[in-house]
Image 1 (spheres, rainbow, N blue to C red):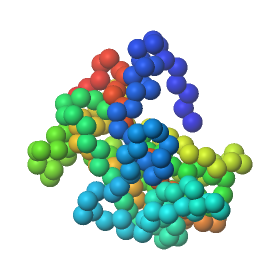
Image 2: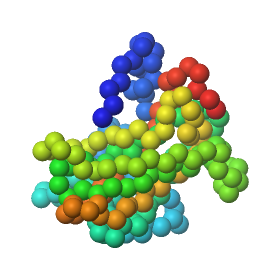
Image 3: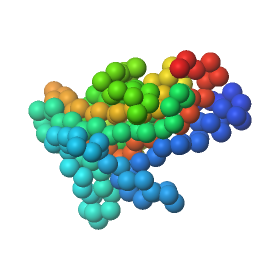
Image 4: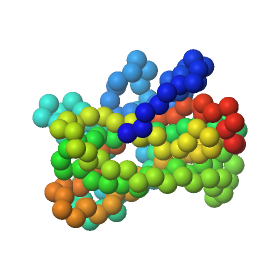
Length: 186
């Protein structure tokens, strides 16, 4: 985990002002449902609640061979710098790894065959703490515009890591905020 220390109140305000929050459960007063791209594939991911009370839904994949894929859109005003996050379930047992890719197209109205920037991050849902919690993972950086308007976040599961039992990946939220670095490159 990364520790963040704000250098000013303005930076703290920007880092807490999420402009795009789409999640699977109604956590906030305004709820924007987390849905994959229309017409896109949800290969191996299914939306359901896997807890005993059936109250904590997520987009879940469990195939030991990996290769399951899902893509979510982020649609914000173009020509600004945005930092993208994904919230996953982190737990001490049964969790898998995934590769998350953020493709920045800039403006949704432009040709989507031209990617301006791609950011890729490997994410592990397993940790040592004996607790299972919702965990935000920052995918793009504050000092480089990983998203400048319309972006797509693709998650692909990896095969089960040798020595582990289980390969569960659970996606809960995709969110974005403005970059806080004053010298953000667009």
